Length: 288
Image (cartoon, rainbow, N blue to C red; front, side, top):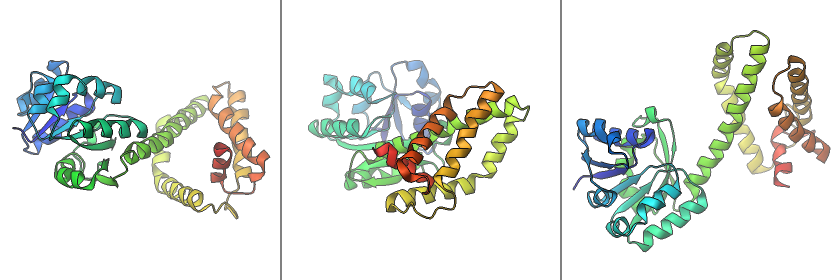
């Protein structure tokens, strides 16, 4: 038997399998399109002829496909489900906390130990000392798999036995990233409209990373403790500034969807009486 099987060889799955192979581990791989395994086979991986054979080949099975529905389509066939008994299934596809709980229940019914994971990295970062993968599940199962997982991510982080924790934190991070990506693109529109370098704008944001990180830490602390009073900069002040982003977009004849959305949220919070509080008081209207 090989030490681990990787099912799914898209960009991320191939990166996972490659990191295991390069660490010297014996690895079996499988993908619907066998051509995607060619480079890994040249590097030393074994290509299984079927998903069931891939599961049979190793005590640990890592699945990284597009989503949990794709995982179910592979795992819930009679042959594959039967092969899982006595093995550890590590799910690294993207899903929701509810899907994670359903997947764990299904795996346990079929005699498999189960870990649910979430990758906070790009494929090129897999195998790095600082790369973060979140993992949730039974502590004993995690401890048995920890050395292998550290091969994939030196920053592997155990989230505890609540199986939905990893996918929940991944969703929270993705929410933050979605807003950041949209806001960066709107900032790029502003720069283009005024003939400024977008690359220089990106570089400036990078230089502000420590300050922005400290602000994120502060806001998380404020929300958890509910300490919204006496801010250094009030929500009303920020709301006025964001309102001017709408004016600027209209004057520059650029897309105004993002600033209008943001300005409307801040206006709701101000109208609800939170204008003198921390920016994080926005969460009060989002909870309503």
